Length: 185
Ligand code: ADP
Ligand code: 5GP
Image 1 (cartoon, rainbow, N blue to C red):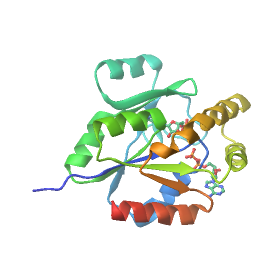
Image 2 (image 1 turned 45 degrees about the vertical axis):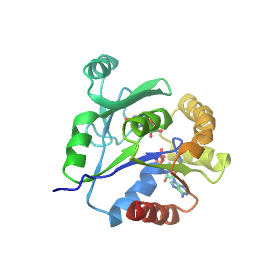
Image 3 (image 1 turned 90 degrees about the vertical axis):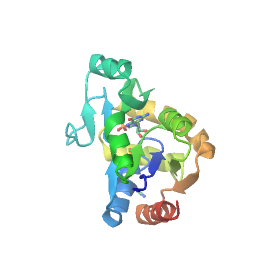
């Protein structure tokens, strides 16, 4: 009988380095599926539809919610985000590990539905470092940066509910810590 894949939830404030650390992990760990979320936010320069996100309208999003097509969904910084259910369930059934880069409300929903999912919170070394990274990435307007920093305060208080907390000081060190968690899960 095939063994099911494992679900890994990776959360942390916007700009903490989740994509950077996961990118490094995936250089060393290749049998995985990275869940591509749907969102109503506008693409950043360089983001491609169907790669970083499925960029959809609020009407399309609401229709997917109605049809039960999301595994979880949440509002974040005035936009909607959701994990399409079908590909995640298919990959897990095929024995492939699935990674979800989602915020804290979505993580709670996944943990409630799938208690065996492994949750990892990526934390910044300091709030100042987080702000510097958000500004350094230079992809968001001042208003969006402020919204993300405001949200970060609440997100950081959620870290205690996660199975693991990884501080992203040096991204390669954080990636090897994450790899160890994956290998021992
Ligand atoms: P997230 O996916 O969590 O929103 P990103 O991976 O886009 O964050 O990283 C945000 C910014 O911070 C990027 O410009 C990235 O290069 C930078 N960054 C990521 N990890 C580190 C680190 N350990 N030290 C310094 N800068 C980092
Ligand atoms: P960003 O707009 O910076 O790409 O993402 C904002 C936040 O939304 C991040 O914390 C990211 O993890 C989260 N996010 C991305 N996709 C999803 C999703 O499908 N569901 C939920 N709940 N959060 C998501």
